[in-house]
Length: 250
Image (cartoon, rainbow, N blue to C red; front, top):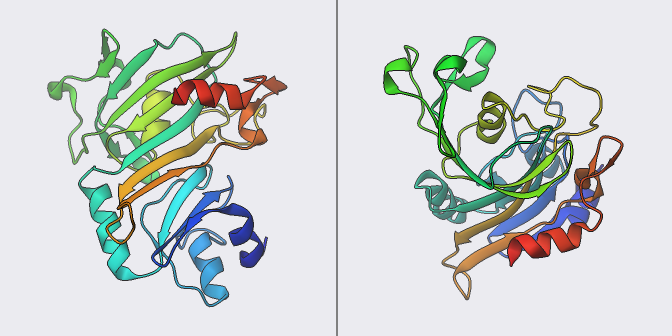
């Protein structure tokens, strides 16, 4: 898709400082390793955009881009300080998760630049509804404290819909955390090799940040997932997605 059409179709919010898009799954935000990405597409049409944050190529949903470096600095600092509120929707290809849970597992980078938990899988323990690892079991080398909170929104016989809040923003954090506790995302190419899912079922749903140039001084963004997110395998995880989202938001 050409940039003008993609920009128009996916635009969620825009002002003089930022552009928020509902990114389709399958296109990158930025990065030299990819054939194309949002930033490059925009540049090819004479528009310079600065990514405030990134979501994976396989992830759909909200992504925020700054139009100038002043706004970019104001917004990226909030991500760095962990004051930006991020909420994702995720579907696992499993059942058995609790109503609420916390995954408090540090991440590291392994062979071939693969993100992994910074400890052997067998060292992960579940205490109540929190998954953690003893510091004595951490692997040698650099590791990055990482924490993900989730709430179960819907259960079927084969899948679970989660509302996920990553309190840290590590690369692949949600995907790795859920996979290493035994609940990989449906369709995740890193951890789910089945051909039953045409996409990864992870969606950046809500984003809230301070925006000093606006009145009121806040960006409160929301992008409901499209039909492809709700179609899981041969069926739908929810007959009425709008009702599910309304119940979550209540």
